Length: 276
Image (cartoon, rainbow, N blue to C red; front, top):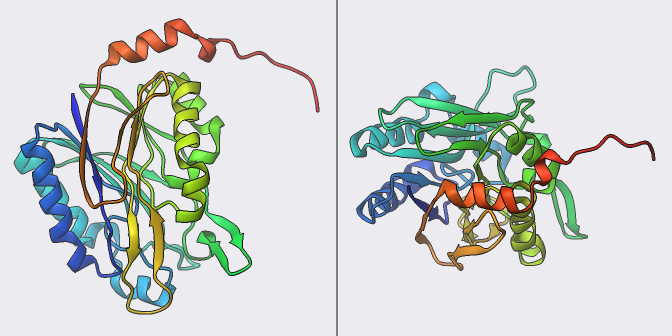
């Protein structure tokens, strides 16, 4: 299976972002991809809670999702909508950060809500509290496709290796990590974290990312790291998108998953231990 990772630089305007995403999906299909992946918050990247609530929609009303489902059906591809910011019916009004795996008939084959919230102090002047606007998911998700078993994760999840181990031990051969990774922490940790998750699990890691400075109607624009990556089950970086908007391709072979896991079968070597 040929996979294509889209690298985007979305704004806080879903209507303006969608045509760019569609154009890159079509470029990916023209390049032979049967599995196309978009980054986290494909529809809207914003830190302004009022702006988010003004432009985001519930899943059933989200135009980005509906259009991308139609596109997947028209092109006959598997499409990972890395994530969308969505309204929920939660009493506290928090949003969902939700990933969708769309089948070639346009049906949603799997949904995953981001479990780990990015609540960090990058510096004295740069703090994030994702949990103030988004509510965390509670369930790990593994999806069966004709080309691989796919484990769904999102961005900050990558710092929690037990999630990836659980998915791999349940059969995941491909792990998806769509992201809008902070540019400071990305420069320090992005490549190392993704390679580590691949090495630990013997799985492909596919991480389509947001990049650059993201235009915003209100507040300080966000900056993201880019460098969408495809990592082999042996931990090799197969392709790196750098910092430009565009599409990168990788050919997946499950024989490489089997080979890596046979060489170092650590997924079957867990032992109980005491302490600390």
